[in-house]
Image 1 (cartoon, rainbow, N blue to C red):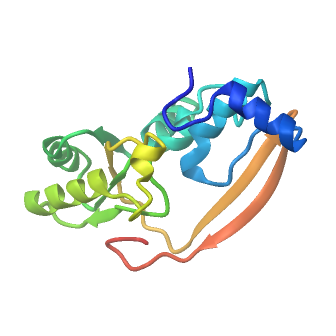
Image 2 (cartoon, rainbow, N blue to C red; image 1 turned 90 degrees about the vertical axis):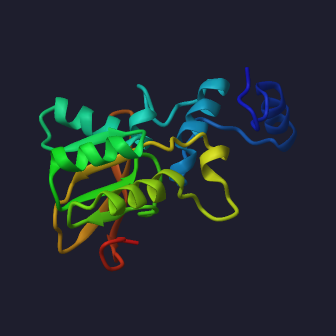
Length: 188
């Protein structure tokens, strides 16, 4: 069945027929819409965003595990669902570390913890757990997890993002973005 808020397969097919739009695949540039786009692709029998489970495309903990399992070193990390878990995670990882939402974007809710302070950790956890884009309600609209990731802080002078697509085994780079981050401890 259709997920809440989405059109049914029949409604989508009728719309496409009425407008004359022919689709061969589904892609999104909106990071938060990856899972919804994957769902629509599957529903319409289109080429999907990925052939496997799309969850790790959005979930940083799942992505880090897959990378680690395939020999790509990752910072230490612990997924947390409660503030008390975050306190234990900071103790285990050590400071400095970073507390951030496991599934959001644009550095929303990201905070560096430089000293072990339970009150600061709980505040950072609550911020990461509750953050959303004002008036967009992304967490509800796109079923985004409220879990929080505590991870080892890796200092960097520059952050660069490479966006690409693989089609029929051929990788195409779509964009290389030099990111300008705001000052720590927030990184926006």
